[in-house]
Structure formats: C-alpha cells, structure tokens
View (spheres, rainbow, N blue to C red):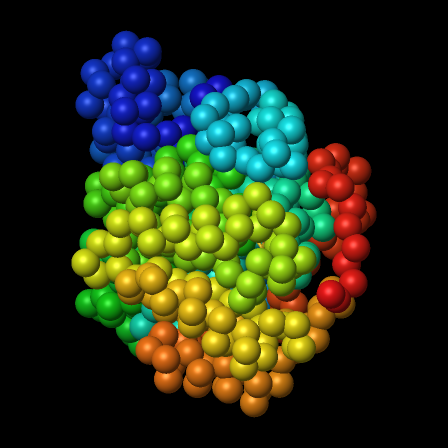
Length: 422
Ligand code: SF4
C-alpha cells in the first residue's frame, strides 16, 4: 500500500500514471487531500467512483493516532500523537546527512534507516480571531539543548512529510468538531486563501466565515533543519495556494542555529518565516546551554542571518528563553543588542522559563521587563511571550518523555551530559 499523505502533486500524478490513469487524476487527489482535507477515498467525489475504489485498494492515507489529549484552561489542546512504523527507507536522502552536526550525524542516519513507531507532540492554541498550531518535525531530538526536555529523549526518528502535515490536519479536524461544525465547516476549514473557518450560528446554520487566521509554527519536537527534505516537502504542501493554502507570513520554522540549513533554506523558492532560538548573549553561555553552538558559533550564526534574504514584509525572529540568573542580566540584554546590531529587520521574543523537571529558575517579572526595556530602548523590538497551556505543557517534550520512560521504544541518545545550572 502506498502512503499518499505528504506526497506532492507531481508524486501523486506519477502514482496515477503507474495505475494507468491520466496524470491529471493525481492533481485531483492532491486537491481532495490538501485543499478539501478529505482523507477517506470514498469522500473524494471529484474522482470517478471506480477510481476511488481502485485507489483505496492500492493506497492509504494515514493520520496519527491521538494517544493523549490535554486541554488547558486557556483553551489550548496539547496532543500526544502515536506514529506507526513503516518499512520505507531513505526518507531524507539529502537533508540530514548534509546538515547534521558531527555528534548527531550517526544517529540521524540510523533514524532514516529505521522507521520505528514513535510519539510526538503538537499543540493547538486558539485565540480571538486566530489559531496557532505548533507541530513537531522529528520524534525526539539530537541537538541536546540543555533547557529542553525533548533533548532528553534523544533522537528517535525523523518524521516524514506526511507525518508533519498530518499534525496540522488532526488539530484542525478536531477543532472543527469542537467548534460544533460539521463536515461542511471542516472542509472549509483552513484555507488561508481562506484564512478562516466557518462558524455555525446560534440556530446551527452556517454563517459567513469570520476571518480566523491560522498560524503554524515548527517549534515542537525536533530540529527542522536536520530533517530538511521532509520538512520542506511538508511546507510546500502547507504553503501551496492549491494545497492547504497557508500564507508564508503565517508559518514559522524555528531552528537552534543549524547554519548550513539556514543557508539552504534561504535558497528555497517556497519558504516559511525563520526564527532563531538564541537564548544566550555570548558564546561561552551559548556553548553551555546549547552545545550546537560549538559547531556553529555566534559569529557564523549571525553571518548566516545577515545573509538571509528577507522578503519585503519579513523580519527575523530571535527567541530568548529567560533563565533566572543565567542569561537574564542587563549586561546580557546589552550584549544581545550588540549581537543583533548588524542585522536589518529583527525582533526578539522573550520567553519566560516554564518551571519543570530541569534545574533552571524563572526570571523575575522585573528582570524580564528590564531586559525588554533595554532592547527596546536600543531599537530592538522585544516582546514577552508567555507559553500557552502552561497547565498542561510545563515544557516541550514532557508528554513524550513521560511516555517513553514507560516504553521499550529504542532511543538514539546523544552522549550524556551534566544538567547542572552553569
Ligand atoms: Fe531540539 Fe529544539 Fe529541544 Fe533544542 S530546543 S533540543 S533543537 S527540540
């Protein structure tokens, strides 16, 4: 059985050609899958009935199993998805092997060879007028940022393009249902060509859509640029006006600073916005928090950022997790200003640390405000971003970590490290 979810229009055309069907039927399947989000072949009414039956015998569309679902008091829903294993090989023939660090290269290659069952997380965050879906690109992660619980999983495996887009689809399907919508509402759901979902009125009748914007952020488990090809294949589907139809202004990829991946992404015709997980104001600090910095130190990272071709509407986002008494001093803020001085359009998101299992402290609100003020006064726009769903997501990776501690799923661990606060 061929898995169709995650396939491009060209791949679906080729699939139809192999079946002896006209290639344009592949374009119709593409439309049904991604623009209409019909995952049951019987519902793909743009195909002749005989072809629907034939395709159902040859192919499948697999959505992840929702293993756990946690609803936050603030309306966010955190999912733990179960992904099956497959026998397909070589999902990432180019991406990871070129971009991975020396430390992680071996694990990445093993991950490509073995498509084992895995769990990943995604979060759906609704708010007035918009909804944001945070998705994972790998199960676990080999990058080993010391403040991140996902790092403790090690790399389990890379996700396929289908497994990446499927997280968006399940969150949308579920939110459509939760909002009281039927199939019609769900079908209309995402398109940002539609950036809006239809809402039933009090009578239950469908009304004109409210302009609900859908944002997707690649900030869940994994380092997206170490799973380059499947991530880009998923993004091409999400950002294609004939596919899911999201605007590139509403999709953000966050990286720990994989310089070759940033350079490679800069050359992509279709690309999302870029966010850099900075979290330190100098190399010494960043080496201690994010060992990837030894491979791609700040001067190299800033150079890649300087050369990154921003579109007219675009800015680079830097994320800075505020760790009490570690990276949150006024001197740190001044160093961050200097670091970013050579870049054109930037903004900084200050993320208060979510207390959890790891040995870090929260920064005080006064300290965060002081940090923000210093950046703003020096002309660097800075915003404080509190994590949504704190009551159900103390930190990224926590759910999967809980699961994995109780399972026999093999994990490719990076060398063990000292977790003490430095
Ligand atoms: Fe991986 Fe991101 Fe966690 Fe770093 S912060 S270990 S890149 S998931």
